[in-house]
Image (cartoon, rainbow, N blue to C red; front, side, top):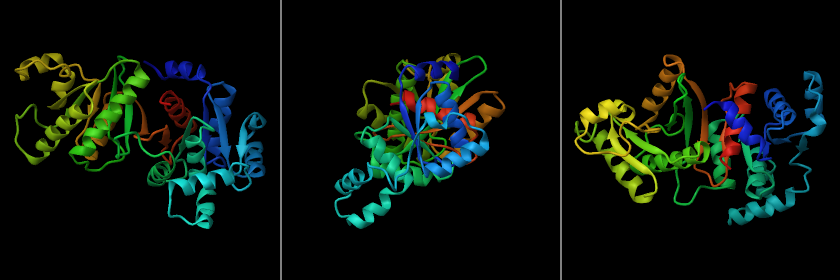
Length: 323
């Protein structure tokens, strides 16, 4: 699996993606490329004159082919204020008007109202702000209360793993960990077109060690299995047991549908997840695509504030395939 395959799939979907940070140069360049290559129909939020001025200075030729919306003057504004007031029952209308003018909120409401398919932000805004805006507009998936993230890790031999959560939850409890596993499994199936094999990781394999941190993972596995009986879920596993059939045969007494065959790896905390994806990326020479936000009822994702044009394009492609 290469990102080129995702791009080919995305082109066939004709998705609309809103970029709330439409006046950022990297966003402008990415939107230009996405439109020129026919990957998506980008929508930029911001002051139209300012966007044209920035685009002209950058030498972007196709801005006239890209829809630009100013939340302050949009004909959607009044409808979105009403919609926001419906969502937040106790809010004053004047306060709602100020909130809806915020590009992140306006963009989220565009997704919620079906005016576009997804939103990509975070080039300027923090991850916390993107998550808060998503929760206030599109909300979460049924039975999910935990926003999280995943990385798509593509190894040099083209094996693909989804790593989660490597960017959002510092120390998830067993319920949050279970939700992270289920949500990542849902997105693996959407993106890869096959059922996930979800391994919950630990420094213990099936009770080989005793510790509260191990017990947390064991409880998460039980909760995840109760919440979703369609996916193959197992653990707690050390990572070698999860990905090596040879090791799994040596370490496990019972047969597991996941051990040695896992394609979704759920890390017990942010320390282990973040370290693991970076070791895999830099020492294992893997391509790391992400982090991609997940858990919301409709696709909204975050960018690193150091994101380059290529990163924005790849995140946009992935989030389109999740819608």
